[in-house]
Image 1: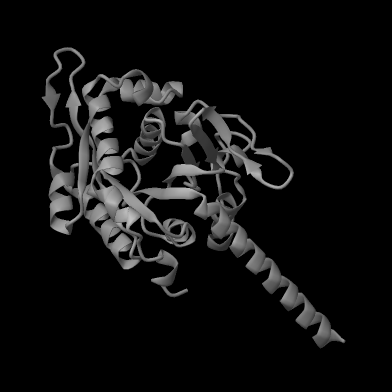
Image 2: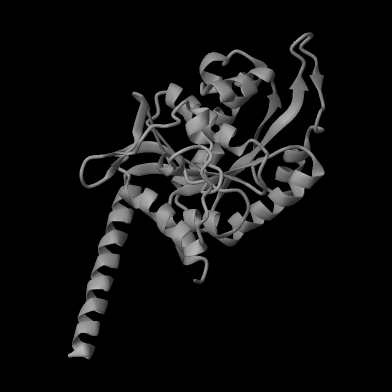
Length: 298
């Protein structure tokens, strides 16, 4: 009797896993491209780049989802002015927040009671939460799902890369100085190991634009990201200088690109988007990439 009940339970678990796999695959098949925004380390402005990239794509008429699965530092609610918003549900699925006609947002930060709460989860729980956000959110059809992934090359970004399927690609964010470049070099190698195409490298904080005279100061040096892209044989998407309004916009919960598209940094964001949607990078994604799930053993 005990053996039979154990077998039945095992079969039920297997059936449930298969149903969840089908649901995940079905969700991801509704999305044109999955763009994973990665960084080799924290503090390089990855979330700011992800938020403004999503908004800039939406401003071009693309149907965009912005998913924040940065488990330990979900910044998207703050950057998008959505702090304190609860997760909606239609009874079967989680419903993302509609920021505009073309932009929907979902964040792990919406699960936290306050912005002071710390997420203290072990690896398996983090994997299950990331999987749930990919499987259970009702995105509908999207041209792009921009995913703000956790920094580094550990379990969380690995989980994201393996779960999203193809076509997918990585936008790797760095700052110009050597310390950041070393970490991003490992991030590019991580993508290569997973057969996850690198859409390109973005050099963030590439010079400071003086608000008084407009002169550009090489605060953290410049050119490191471009040199890395050349070294690793991946596309360079552009360099985004620091402007005080980027900081002010983030603190105010208003994406920088919405109100400052005509600035030097606004033009840099637009250049990055143009290279993603209109260049060889998009063509490479459209041709289909190897599924990262098949490239790494458990």
